[in-house]
Image: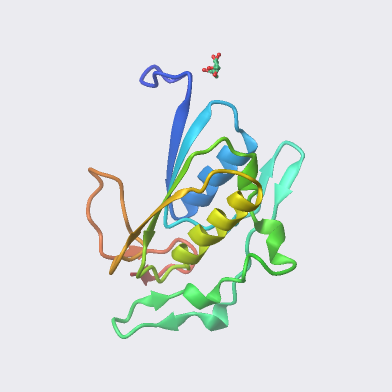
Length: 170
Ligand SMILES: *[C@@H]1O[C@H](CO)[C@@H](O)[C@H](O)[C@H]1NC(C)=O
């Protein structure tokens, strides 16, 4: 990105939504240099969906239990309770070591996110950073807002087709 002619440099900021959020957290933690701000929209604090490999490092993905997925009244899928708790053994191996990142972090949270517990994950990130003597991240909570919060100029969706389960999620 830093070599892209449209990028001014010498530093860049990251912005990731959903799975893109944990990817940005990993980039901030493991690539570090020249990443000086990270914005996460409804992100998880653990690596999700696929294992992450970088040089000799590998981070397993956070597991989930398909039997805990629920259908909401709207007919849309609720995945909140299906994800394993990233703070429990052995799931914590999927946690991203945020303290290695430069920061600062901004977490944007839809309080009606049914894809996963974005508010809880932002809270875990906050506690984790503080436990390592780092600055508190900024967290902005949006009530009555689901998983799909897109940056400006993205088309406004109310639901999206989840690439893992292949059904529409609110
Ligand atoms: C990264 O930041 C340093 C310090 O500001 C700068 O010297 C270097 O050129 C940057 N790297 C890239 C690839 O832009």
